Structures are given as structure tokens and as C-alpha cells.
Amino acid sequence: MKFFVDTAEIDAIAELNDLGMVDGVTTNPSLILKSGRDIIEVTREICELVSGPVSAEVVATKAEDMIAEGRKLAEIAPNITVKLPLTWDGLKACKTLSGEGKMVNVTLCFSANQALLAAKAGATFISPFIGRLDDVNIDGMDLIADIRQIYDNFGFDTQILAASIRTVNHVTQSALIGADVITAPPNVIKSLANHPLTDKGLEQFMSDWAKTGQKIL
Image (cartoon, rainbow, N blue to C red):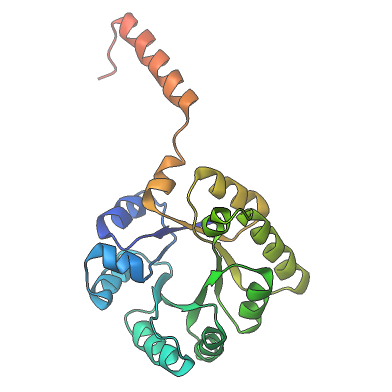
């Protein structure tokens, strides 16, 4: 499974990228706001840092304007993925941009039917939002499972990009179900290494090592 990091913070991306933990990056208007950077400038810097897909989101709501913004964003770098909302206009823009050979990430997906439409429109990625479904007492992982089954049934090439990842359990469950990609904030990706028994075991090893009075270096 591929790991995308969901942030526009360069330092956080660089740290994970150096460890080989970044297969791509996703951004959105809220993350651009948080970064305090110009969207073109920061997106170009991210694209220079990582070789995988970098999602940059349009802000228009009409298809023709989404297409124009998508084309402009795609000029930033060859690894740009144009991010479009899962609306009817977004699907129209997806069809056009994917037809031009551009990578497209259709975002804000909350139903299997929406995912089916995105695949038929030629989306490279579909981004179902797990955490936001959990917020309204709907199991977001059920949606991932439904999309996986539908895509496998009909041989769609669209990759399932599990989004709105908030916990390490979301990552585990997405991997078990068969999501192609997860995108998560840097802190969630880093927390995958944590386990209380690892900490306890290390503490015991260090205590016993100190009692030997030895040194390796």
C-alpha cells in the first residue's frame, strides 16, 4: 500500500520522504491556508521534493472553470494530480482532464455510487473520507470495502485513496480491506511506529544493559 502524506508543510514532508515513507502528497485549500504559503509556490516546492503524485485542488465550482484551473495547476510539474470535488461539474472536469492525460484525484467521496461515477469518468484516484463518515456514526471502513468490491468486480483502474485518516486503526483496516493508498497527516504516519509493549520492552532492555556495565562504542 502506498503512503501519501496529507500536508503542505515542507519540513514534515521532507522528514518522512528521507525515510522512504512518502509515495505522494495530498493538499487542499485548508492545508494551503495552514501553510501560509502561495499555492503555486508551495506546490512547486513539494513536487521538487517528492517524485510521486502531488494533489493540488481546484477551487472553482463550475466545470469549465475547474478545467481551466486544473490545466494551470498541471503546468506546475509533471507529477501534479488535479484534485476535483465529487460533484457533477467535478465529474465533467474529470472526464476532460483525464482525457488529456492528466492525473485526477476525485475527492470528498462519501458513497459507493459516487466512487462508481468517478471511475467511469476516468479518475486516477478516488478519495473516500473515512473520518468524516465516522463523525456522523457511519463506519467509513464499510465504504472502503464497498468500493474495493465494485472496482474489483468491473476491473476499474481507479485507485482507492483512503482519506480523512485520523487513527492508526484506520490505516490497518484500509490495508486489510485493500485500499491502494492512504493519505494521512504526518503525525498519524509517525505514530504507526508506536506501541506500548515496544516502549516497555526497550525500557527493560536498557535497564538490563546498564547493569552489565558494558559499552558498544
